[in-house]
Length: 120
Image (cartoon, rainbow, N blue to C red):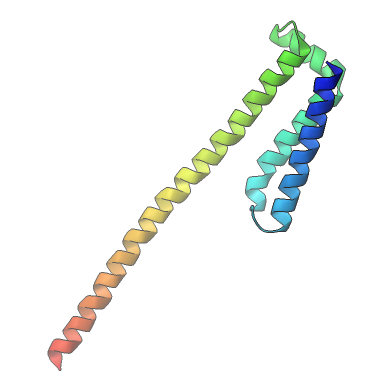
């Protein structure tokens, strides 16, 4: 069990580092990185606090604390991925609306241009 906890500690620290570097290099916006940092911090706390992990395992009715940890981590990352899916969907809708507005503006510009040609 200690090997798994050490691995998850390293994984959470690596995830935090990757997120911070990504934000620093402007590859990720800060508001999107907060959920990843929170998930990595939760993973780190659960991997380092065995009493909390044992308590959560007993509260969830899971016999094995490592299995409880992996279950909680899986659920936590599913929530992060769901949040990002909602954000991506909103961006896609905004992109479609923006594309439609650009097409309307192009049509209006062409109409004005054609009208000015016929007047001359």
